[in-house]
Image (tube, rainbow, N blue to C red; front, side, top):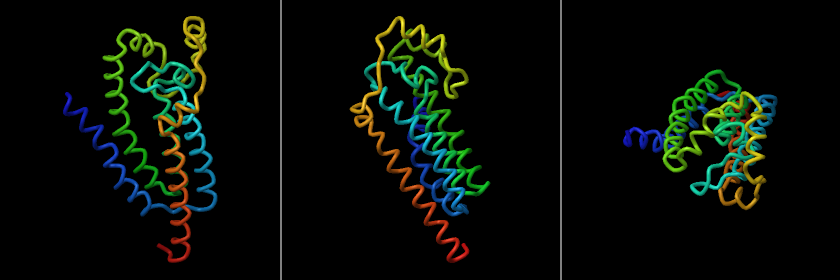
Length: 193
């Protein structure tokens, strides 16, 4: 079991490099696909940023802010980022590559991380997992948020946590990625490849 967990964690990043290379090769971006993809990616960045400002890794169970709506707002934001790049790429092949990569690796990673949280936080995590969906915030969790507000001190977004969690790297990576989409569009227009 531990070996299987290590596989998903280790290969998630390593597999991302060839996926990015294939994505770039098959991309056929246009001004409109990059603009629309950028808007979707911006939504993903916003969700990730707010989540990072509530996350005290390995110190306490995050249940406030976007964590009151989904147990994995960072990955939900990452899914929107990936969708933004799939749109920006302007290619169905690109979209299929990105969706397959995300579906294969991130579901396993989320489940692996949940095992760690269950071990670390015990009954508190089990109760939290019972109330809040794994990934997609299907409902606005009004009941659990109201219940939480009455029993726990309110926690607000924290810029120091955002920085400590190095979430600014997602912004930098997104800007580089969109820049590469502009370069791909220019090369395709100039050389027809």
